[in-house]
Image (tube, rainbow, N blue to C red; front, side, top):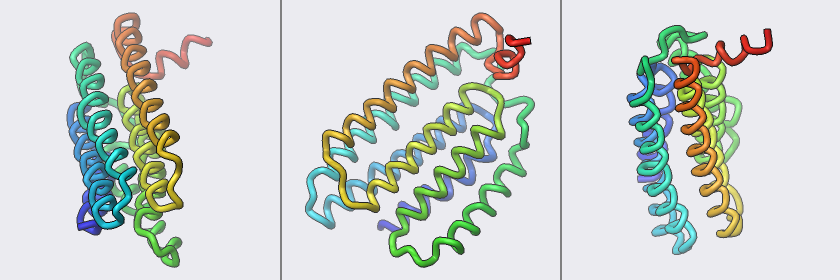
Length: 203
């Protein structure tokens, strides 16, 4: 069960790296977060630790319901619902993400936990999405994928305090809401969420 959920998380990372449609990115993030939430429940069942259930519930509420809701509301305001001119196109992004995964698995072969490897993969894939995309909302998705990677890293290590876990998830929810509001106003002012327009303001 744990291996299947980890595989789903890795597959969604590769697929999301190649997506250009924003609504598909949102669905991919939701599926990835659902797998992480179920992973928390499975760990709670196997270990008998109740804090895994709490993190699982919070993950499902924030990352499969609330954050996708904010993202979908932002999408409705956009003039274009896909990345038209990415820095790295979708096909090459998926290829690069696949190569990263292979390299990470080779380099980190000595680690006993698949969660550490999967967490590093999500961190790298999220960073790739930040670099390879221009739209603010797709870059926000990259940030959220990186945060999912941090959750996996946390699950693989000595458990943190439950209060810290909850604060981290709530912080991500707050940041996502703020970014959704910023995307709305960026699109309203510039009629685009391409971050090139923001970098041109200094000229």
